Image 1 (tube, helix red, strand yellow):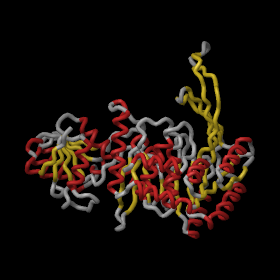
Image 2 (image 1 turned 180 degrees about the horizontal axis):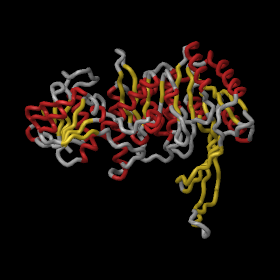
Image 3 (image 1 turned 30 degrees about the vertical axis):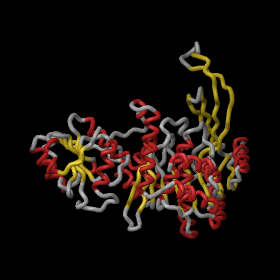
Image 4 (image 1 turned 135 degrees about the vertical axis):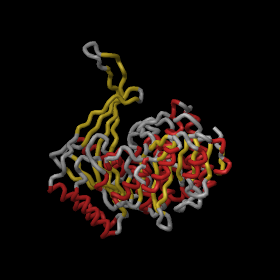
Length: 494
């Protein structure tokens, strides 16, 4: 669809349209969800774009923002306002429908504008965009077209921040001088490849024959493995049981030259998860675990290991699966160690099958929640993704945020040299992932390694985007070497 860019004085052809409004300083998936909802209403879709004379300052001028909106192909027109003249646009265009983000609902200064729309017989819709945790894009686009579009989006995101492949490749060279501690729940993931035999005659149950098994370290252990494979030094602080599973974990840590800061707790088995697959399709998962908090004596041993390792590191990565290792007391100790040794703190909490809230991670250098976890933590299923992200930053007082959006990629939040909050959306580069298990682990590993190496947020986020595409392109959660990442960057950027 061709999108026209016109000033208010030349917009007569859009009378009775569906009108949306905003500044769209950077376009991310939250904006696209919102515009797609407006597109679903009958009629011409017009975006009233706040001008450069409006309140606030934006990293891109109106013409650049308008061109970015036109590339989406969702609207018939972009209305170029001088400032914030939404009322003038409503008087002239008499829109049948006015669609605004949910954040406008309670704003007192927009009530006169809403009354004007009602007095002209128009409808008002407040919407944040539909929330989806799975992609349906392959239903309307070929995999090749979708892959090409995402590569273009990634290149455009890098271009906005002046990033090229030579800068990103040189960043990886700095990682060998970095050392990190990873603390959290250790998991052993087992994948069982099976052959489908048929249906049971006794009950409507699929019958499979197990062919072979393969083990992968998971949880905090695989975050440490990713960091080590990327070239940085790493120590793992965690708790395992007195069992053969723990021995497998220790052997793998030794093979990958990861510092063994494991504490043995005979009262709790090492967390074990087994996934059954047929033709690379997962049937179901069986978990063996204990998720009670650590006993005081075990907790004290973990704290002692942290205190011993902290003076030799640049940062601490918390990978919390809410199985009891990351206790409130340990979080307090992490804050003390960070202040004492000037360490960065990086956090991720995975609660897809457990009860937990990432808001208990306060004053971290970086948090990496996904949208579902953030909405659960904030008890908010209505607000747009931008409002959710800003609330998360305020609630936790984190310096930086990565809001993961599954198949839509993620949004990276940082501050510029003037202290102003900035963000950039990065797409998921894999259009048809093989196995999404561990994508978040690989992203956390790159973000922590890059930031601890004193790299900027946006170049590190670009590297994490490439890392994620590698992680979902293979079955099982395997550490990804720096050389693999280099090749992916060479392929993805000019």
